Amino acid sequence: MSASMWRRRVWLWVPALLFFLLNVGAYGVYRTSYADQTAGLESRIATREGELESLSERRGELDALVTQARLNQEQIEDLYRDRFSTRRQRLTRATAEIRELAGQAGLEVRSIAYPEEEVEGYSLIERSFIFSVEGTYQQLRRFVNFLEISPSFLALRRITLSGTSGGSEELLRMSLTMSTLFAEEDAVALERGPSS
Figure: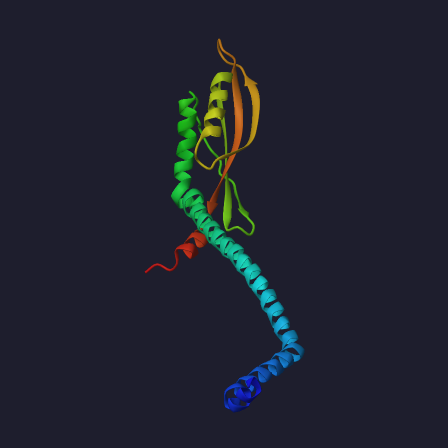
C-alpha cells in the first residue's frame, strides 16, 4: 500500500527529489571549483584589510607630522618677526637695554662698537656689541648676571678682565662682546607678503 501511495503522488515528491539532486550537484561543483577561489578571495580581502589598517595608521602619523611641520613653520615665523625682528625695530632697544642693565649694576657704558656679519642661509644678521665698563668686582659680577638673566635675545660672547688703578677700592676694567640676531629686512618683508 505504501508503494502505490508513492506512485500515486509522484507529482509531489519527484520535484522535491530533483531539487535535492540539483543542490547536491551544485554543492559538488562549488566544492571542487569555487571553494578554492572563495578561500583565495577571502584571504586577499583579509590581506587588503590589514594593509588598509596599516596605511590608516601611517596616514595618521603623516598627518601628525604635517601638523607639527606647520606648527614649527609658524613658530619660526614668530621667531623671525618677534624675537629677531629687524635692526630698525630692535637695535635701539637692545642698546638701551645694555646701558640700562649696566646702570642697574652701578656701571656706565660710554661707547659701543657694532660690527655685524650675515648668517649664511638663514636670512639673519649677527650684530655684535663691543664695549667696556669699569667698576668693582661686585658691580661687574652683578652686570654679567643681569645680562645672563635678561629675557632679550642677547648672547654673551667674550669677556676679558683687567685691573686698573683706582682710589681706595681697586677698579677692574671688563671688555665685553655680546651679540644678537636680526632678521634681514627682505626676509621679514617676504614673510609678511606684499603691502596693500
